Length: 289
Image (cartoon, rainbow, N blue to C red; front, side, top):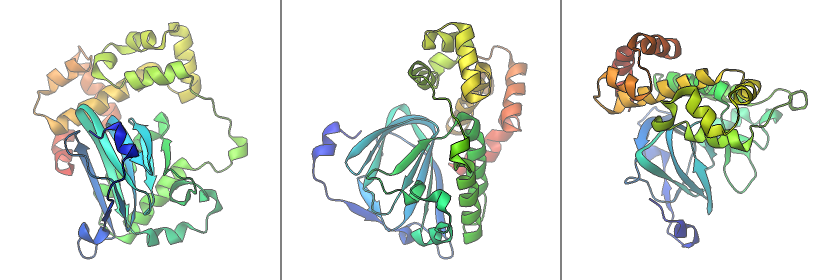
């Protein structure tokens, strides 16, 4: 783990080069991996740009001498000159998707004013980052999964970037009125990512919010357009997916750990969210990490 004092210490910065990671004919590098607190990398910059997305877990991102907390749904756009490193925290580490490619691949997108001062074009000191809205996280993960299965060529990369920017960029800022998530709900949403909380269901989430059941349900629906139980089931299934990839635990035990006492209901919820059974998911995805 990186000590907080690391922000104040002058360090030698290493430079990562894309050619060291890509094979001949490949235009980008995509990895989905689990990082632990024992194997974080050094502070570095690159001769390429990269983005990373947090699937599960959390940690700290240190970039240009500033520190940012990481949590699921976080998406970061790293420019070549940014000096940064990730410091995963917690016993289960942090699962991320990481995409690296040449800055020249972005020339195609320079013509779009909607992207100005966003993403890789940000002019701020810190790298551009955002918390992907809950209702868009599944679609974003679908694009990442499709990229992982594609040929590592220009068309696949540009297709992904067009999809990503279209998903995240408002077409008309002035006509969109967003509702800000209150602090008490943001704190509860962070805690409910943990199995010891989400296995308790909606009742546990309401208790973490410290508000009435009716108020929590109404506020959540107004902001995210879905029910609390739908969100909790997403977190439960995401956790189950991660454990299916990382452990050999029996599926029925994973279901119980997530708070599903009825196996039939668990399989129904899993298939609704993942379009496959737990065994099918495990068989298809284990090769990705």
